[in-house]
Image 1 (cartoon, helix red, strand yellow):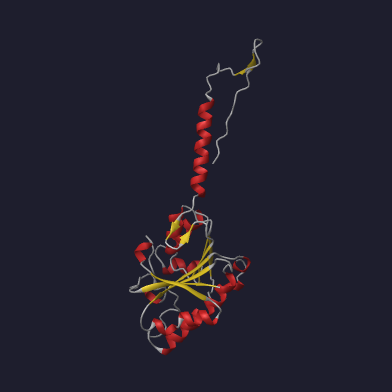
Image 2 (cartoon, one colour):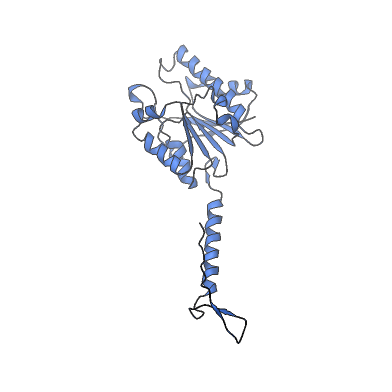
Length: 250
């Protein structure tokens, strides 16, 4: 934001070469200097790097598989802006409204803060998306990837479907993440049957290197509400329990 400074045209005295305004020199140039200093401070504050856990306001971040978009909104609020964020969901815009009580309002706030939001984005094919394929990201984030509760959670069919989802996501994320310093983050529940999804093995088979595994605590992200996202209880949360964020690089 800049302040325009308007100076009145004045008269020139015969006795000297100084220009005077009709306000008889009541303008204080120190006031203008103070205003300019404040502007510079505001600009520097806006540019100041802000962090939320593993994520910086200077990172270009892609969120994959958002439910009600509360996770991406949490970071947007923490950063004070969302111009560095791109948030996607498998759901259509219409389904967001049907499935989540706060979905549309979260999307609207994200967009007002400068975030790009895309619906109908399949994590297994996102590298072919018309916009995403033109971009490279510092961070790609997928929290609790899951195909939906189609079978019992520990059944063979359910496990295979979730493994297929991870396989497709990792291959596509590898194509979109920056080769230099970029990271792919997958937040994943620990223990049985989730350890049967073979997240780390699938990543390694696709040429990704495990950097770090850190505990995930939902309370670190105020406003984030994890959603079941499937069936009649789409808007309901589920117990996170013991979970970790797995960080991979190319």
